[in-house]
Length: 289
Ligand SMILES: C[S@@+](CC[C@H](N)C(=O)[O-])C[C@H]1O[C@@H](n2cnc3c(N)ncnc32)[C@H](O)[C@@H]1O
Image 1 (spheres, rainbow, N blue to C red):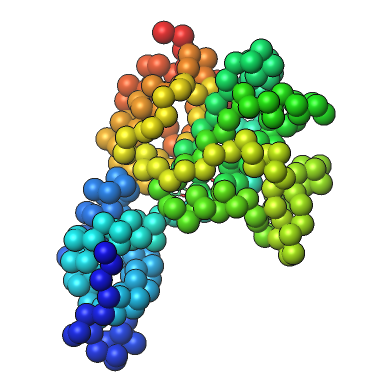
Image 2 (image 1 turned 180 degrees about the vertical axis):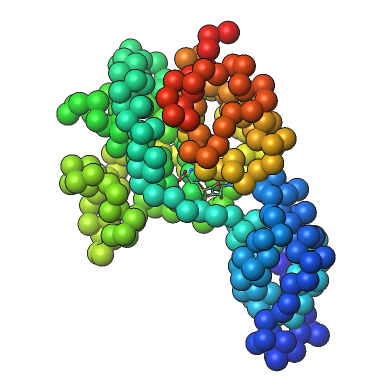
């Protein structure tokens, strides 16, 4: 249960905003690392202060030490804190070369597999608000004017993130004008429907996507193998031990011949390197065993 008003928090302390001292910052960083394996360098102290000050106000707390105590004992507030400290920046067709690679080198096989009634699975791991997974969906639809192969239930796109509000935005599939700007005009015309001043992704594409909250360092419920995994601009927040562990698990979930796409400033380390062959910029294929 989330607790509220701490009696000692005076109105003036709340108005002034609590100070965040180095020990409190380190305590918050340790909790975030334990929960999500996200590293918080000392340079992020201002960011932590500004993102969490609102939580202190909401709970009527005048000191960060009280907030640290609260997140230590309250799992729900810990989850809110983790979400508040994640960086959800994303956009449609980010790192376009991955979508070009998917379309040119992977899509023909995926289509054949789906047309043969075989499952096709793609995972956007650390999906933020969904721009990545819908860019994948639009790219798959580029296989030709007949998109029937996509909608017969063989193709499934999974989008997961640790931040529940981001996941809820994926499920809604509604974006403002600024967000949809990077979408090529042909896709906009075909896959976006005006909803007031905003744009809703067409049902046909939304139906392909399942959006779920998932901590990448928790147990994964998925049992099937994936044809492609996009885990981009997520591992930058983790230390090398966490990266190596996560990459090994991602590779374990790929079927032989499956592709892994990582962010432009990321690299493969640890056991994953032996199992994967580089096929394009930050794109890898899983070698047959
Ligand atoms: C910068 S966004 C990247 C979004 C998208 N993949 C892209 O490249 O545009 C990073 C996402 O990773 C998520 N994330 C960070 N740590 C995570 C964890 N331990 N488990 C799951 N998601 C995590 C964040 O919530 C955030 O939405």
